[in-house]
Each structure stands twice: as C-alpha cells, then as structure tokens.
Length: 105
Image (tube, rainbow, N blue to C red):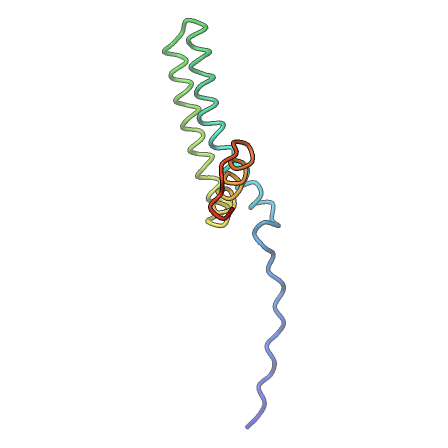
C-alpha cells in the first residue's frame, strides 16, 4: 500500500488576546459599564443642575443606549472569549478593590 503524503504544516493560529480586534472588543465590553451608568448619572446631574431635567434625561437615555451599542460591538469583535476575559477582569478588580473573596480563593 502506498504511503500517504504528510499533511502540510499549518500556520500557528494566533490567540484571540493577541489581536487588535480582540483588544478593542475587550475595551468596548469593559468600557460599557462606566460609560452607561456613569455617563447617564452625569447627564442627569448636569440636567438637574442646569434646570433642564428633561434634556438631562434625554441625554442620559442616549448615553445609556450608546453603551449597549458599545457592548454589542465589543461582543462582535471579541466574541465569547472576550466576554469571559472581561468577566474575569471584573472579578479580579472587584476582589482587589472591595476586598471581596473570589470563589477560588
């Protein structure tokens, strides 16, 4: 029986964390929370201080919706691996900043 030719060597597949798209997606996923809640809170506070509560509410709603677009774009770029990585980063930050115990500690 003739010998089968060896399969061609495959190029090393880069890990998701190495790519620019993954890093950008991860930044969008992580930035979603402070932009959404922080930006909405600042817009509401500004609107109240300026005496324009309705405008502040409209701006707050717009900023909050933009944060959801950021989350969607981040998930599209980084995928499930990016979401898992973001959750791990949030868990680590929470345990270090607020002294919470992690499940594996």
